Structure formats: structure tokens, C-alpha cells
Length: 243
Ligand code: PGA
Image (cartoon, rainbow, N blue to C red; front, side):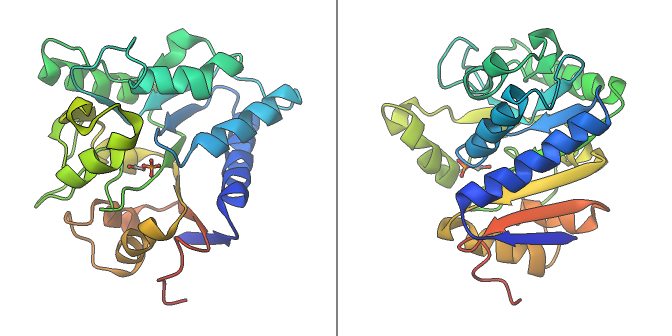
């Protein structure tokens, strides 16, 4: 496990963007696993800057997002599809046909989950997975539970996740209560994982993830078993670590 401590959000974003840029330049048909939320927005901005400097090319890149709200159409501006278009895809030369987000409007979510898993597997698994982390240590929408979910699955969001995400919606009532999330199998099968965290509200989740026992009540703790995981933490997120 590799831990990089940086000063602040801006430095975290630059470090992460460099890693993504080197992945894309080393392997021009890389498969990237992408995350949404406030944390990776700065990384996506930096990636766009590097792209605008003509240093990287996304023509042959494929992406899989971790999750999507259930029963929200992709036209809804709070959907993660919309988020990705606005924060990254509309600004780089990626072919949108090669960008995948679970279909939150799927009539049969179980079938959609299986379809998503087989798409990821068919593309040879993810080369580089970007993760944020919830203050309850969720990754994707793998919420604390008594077991780790293996495949893509329909999740009941925890109240703390609904509360945390309410800031993006007009009211708490509008926040979807369910989501489709990639499970741990695809995340753990990624060849390389980077997890980004910024801010005091992530400090305890980071401490339990890195220093605590591996337990599904701390979903991100499973990353202790990943052979190539890098945590990029700002000072506040790293503040409770022993060293
Ligand atoms: P955030 O969310 O980046 O908006 O803090 C992270 C997450 O819930 O995974």
C-alpha cells in the first residue's frame, strides 16, 4: 500500500491527474474506472488542462463509472452520466460510445447489473481505478454492511450518504434512495487503484481503512488486500493516521 500525503485539495488533484495522464500515455487504449462526487472534480480539471496542452489523447480510451443513482434518467442533471459529461467527457476527445455508466433507468436492475459486470470483464478489466471515499468509508456505493458485495448490485443508500449528497439536490427528499454500484470484484480486479481523500470529514474513514481490520463495516478496508493501491491524501484527510 502506497500513501502519498499532500498539502491540500489542489495538490491532491494534480498528483492524481499526473497518474491518470501517465496511464493514458503509456497505454493509449487504457480502461479507466471513474468516480463522481466533489473529490475528483479537481482531478478532472487538471486532466483537461493536460489534454489541452496536447500531451494526452483519449481517442482509444474506455471508461467505466462506479455507480449511478437508481431511477434517475441520464438527462437529469444530478445523474452521474450528466456529471461525467459536464466535468470531463465534454472537454476531451473521448468517444462517448466508449464511456459507460450503469443505466439508472433500467427496468430490470438485476439484468443491468449483470450486463455491466460482463462489459467490464469483456474489456479486460480496469487498468486504473479512481476512487473517492465516503465519510462512512464507502467506495462507489458499497455501503457498510455485514458482507462485501461481489458484483454490480442495487444498493439501498445509507441515511448518512443521502444526507451527504443532499447538497447537490434542491431538497433532501429529491435524493434517490437507491443506486446501482459496481461491487468489490471489479474494483479489486483493477490493475491499479488510486483513492483520493481531502478534508477532515474523511479523516476517520481513512484511518479505519488503512489502519483498522479488514471488515465490510468499513468497505474501503478491502483495499488493504489490493496489490497496487495508492492513497493520495491531503493533510486533513491524513490527520488521524498514526504516521
Ligand atoms: P465526495 O464523495 O467526493 O463528494 O466527498 C465521495 C464518495 O461518497 O465516494
